[in-house]
Length: 113
Image (cartoon, rainbow, N blue to C red; front, side, top):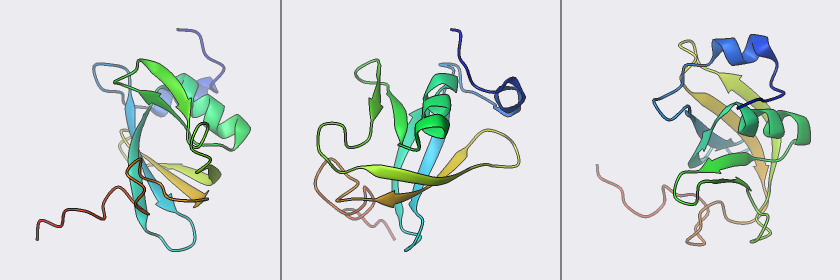
């Protein structure tokens, strides 16, 4: 797939077998971990250029912009790459709940410990 992602950034990414990198999404102000999404080069490029959280939906097989249908948008402040290049940290201003269940974060429901 041809993308417009900066080749220097693309070269730093370590992708899984599906060509994806996990993106941990964190509230830029509260530091709450909101969700986990998946990005390929194109989703990362779209996120970096539009400032809106854009992900690859593994279940639907298409790109989606957070809040496009729900109105619960993410305005991206910063994107960081971890030391191994295999995980992204996306710092956002979240408008409305981040989880599709209506919860503030996707990690509110089930505490295991």
